[in-house]
Image (tube, rainbow, N blue to C red; front, side, top):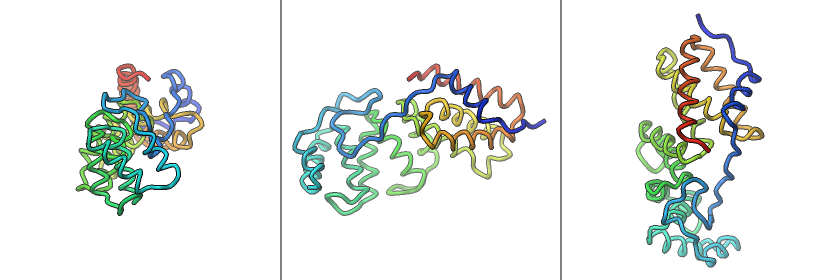
Length: 225
């Protein structure tokens, strides 16, 4: 027996019980501190010159400053340099270089870089398309507290070939449940997460839904915000 469509009100209640958290602000391309979640040791403040140059639109100078810090192992600078390459700021757009710098920062636990690296693998942007690596880095970002990562991970399991695979439905529902709980109430993405959750759980049995809910709560207990 399939579940009927879950109401948004019910899921909102479940999310409230799980403990909704405010989504971290989008990381600017000129962060001067590390990620808000478990910043790595090397994520030290950047120079005032780098910040000032970027803010006045002098991308060439900012690019040089970021490069120096990034080469020295600063995760914040590595992430920022990746963004500059991705946007073609201070240098020609280079998706491969962007992904490479995201990877360096991601390896140090920088959540925003992990999220962007996952997106690169998911779309094959600057790297070979690799859904397994995309899922891996979305998980890493989620564990670091990136609120959007669980949503993207849930969507990855909502692929057509997974429609008749209970394990895919289970993972999709679990991660979308986490997304609803972790995204800010005012974030439009939370509504989309609710709608996606409704869609996937409509195909689940009560037993499957209960298990997905259990897995989501277990994960959130292991990774509190």
